[in-house]
Amino acid sequence: MAEQQAWRAVHYRSADDRLDLFARDYPGGEGASPLLMMHGLTRNSADFEPLVQHLGDKYRMIVPDQRGRARSEYDPDPANYRPDIYVPDMWALLDTLGIERVTLVGTSMGGLMSMIMGATRPDRISAIVLNDIGPELMQEGLDRIRTYVGGRAIMKDWDEAADRCKAINETAMDGFTAADWLAFARRTCEQVPEGGIRFAYDPAIAAGMAEEDPATVPADLWPMWDTLSDIPVLALRGAKSDLLSAETVQQMKARHSGPFAHADIAGRGHAPILDEPDALAAIEPFLAAYG
Image (tube, rainbow, N blue to C red; front, top):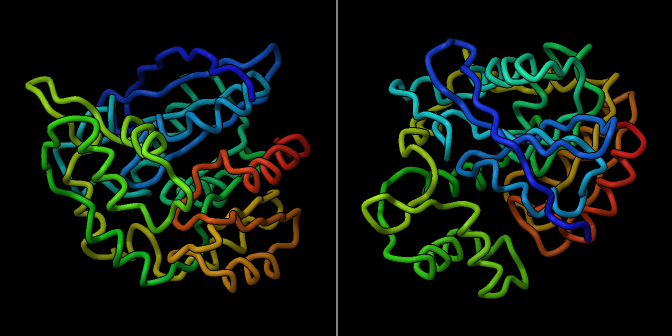
């Protein structure tokens, strides 16, 4: 495992010029190919720390906090917490850094953003890694996510935060120890200035889960998937996922005429951490070939 490399802070304006947004920039070695790594609904840029540690300086890794998460400003209009708004922010980030072409790594919501980016600007995308997300989602997983998104409960300390993270995610993470849950909490939560710990996101992001708006994300994502056929794709799926079915992954493969690889991650539901042996065994050769 490589040593954790340092990152530099990137501050940039949102595409609508309303918010100050934040990203980590891990520079990588000389001439390192860029990866844009996008987190899930309730996560933030810290979510990719375990994968970054393994990839080391092989790649330049750009890891943003989407608006309303961690170090990025909260949007006063909750209606803007949706993928079709986040995607222009990602183009603004890449343009700020002068990055013309990039490989995308997207977990859950970040994977949905990856598909939108590939469908709308394929000339700028080298390859896509999707983490437990696809063009068809299981209702069971969507309903489960709705049960915990939002709220602003303050936890008294990191041990309580770890217990809360465990309560939400235990069924998806076989073999996690107390130390693993504490590390998970430190990536997912933040300290409150007046004392205590809270999840590092604006509770208003729950508004985007309240109802599906076909104007922002079509109910049928298969036509969008079909436009990605020329882009190499690696689809990772938690073997216990309640959001992405094995049948959907097989259909993704059948409808993708370009390079396509997939792997089930043992002992994981939604979503794998990406430092699991099964995940690394798929990610590292894929990035070497296409990233």
